[in-house]
Length: 250
Image 1 (cartoon, helix red, strand yellow):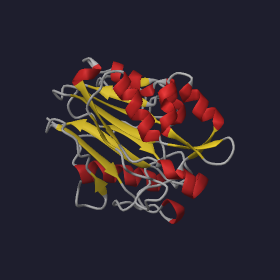
Image 2 (cartoon, one colour):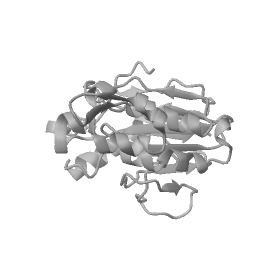
Image 3 (tube, helix red, strand yellow):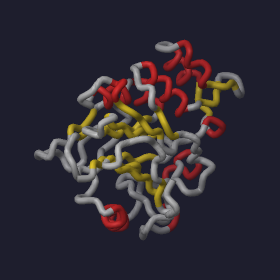
Image 4 (cartoon, helix red, strand yellow):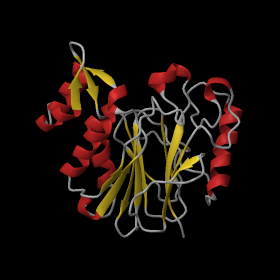
């Protein structure tokens, strides 16, 4: 992990030219109040000028060759193909993939699970936003399908998300996962009637391993209890967003 409190560097065996970083609230930002200080989300109520300045600081701090490719995330399964040609400024998608050098992919979260992916040879990368709806619907499988190799030749890193002790869900969430995978029951712990603690990262590991990825790393965070991160469950509608980024360095 990075010694710089502004960033977390994923600890995974990716090729050296596959670079990745996760922002924290302690980054070089200018947001104030509930959004202090390094909010990167443009649709959570923060001052637009502050968000623009914070996003510009990402590129400068990480030495990126261009501004990251931000997405308009909607809890779906669409994957934006970042091929260097013309595309929407912020495609409506919950994952992105590229095989091009110098095209940083960015996922915004505040309790949902960011997942970074790369091929073992470092020829291509992908990033996905996995809240429970997107995860259950297959966003990780869709992101993997966008890579030019079988899943067994890819690896994944699970970024900061809400931890199981902090994430109580209703029966409908549990049933949505158990309907396709009875073994997912082990990712839920009963609390009060009709409610369960949900281990989002464990569910993601199951989904990844089920399609053949044996190299899954990361996890162990809890955005609700860790003050380094924004958390919608903790802070409500005025929660900012942090970013998980991945790019190929030339």
